[in-house]
Image 1 (cartoon, rainbow, N blue to C red):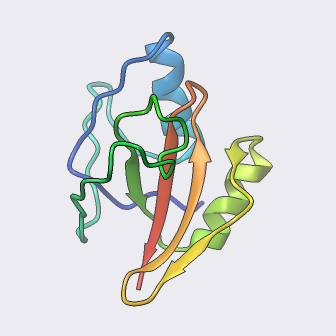
Image 2 (cartoon, rainbow, N blue to C red):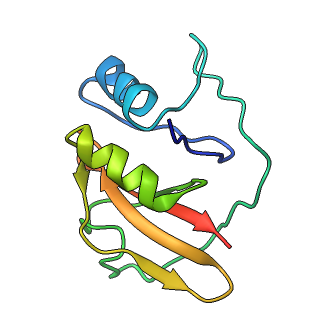
Length: 117
């Protein structure tokens, strides 16, 4: 099973915290313990600010977007579609950076999946 490879940490508000935690664990494959600690593979992490009017995050009410590194973007997107996740049809490639795709979690948060070069 493909799984995300890393980020420093994040906290999300949720109407159903246990359900959303289960979705990230079961659908994206975050291998976390009972306290939420997730040991990640080493790799790059990007911090970037966007214009306040950007549509890149999906909904303009979404103030931040989680970006998760993956080993094989195509395999991860296929896995998410097979699980019934809300996956964007398009992907993008950025020279020198890698490939990007997007999925929306059950609470409506758009997540970027990144396969670095």
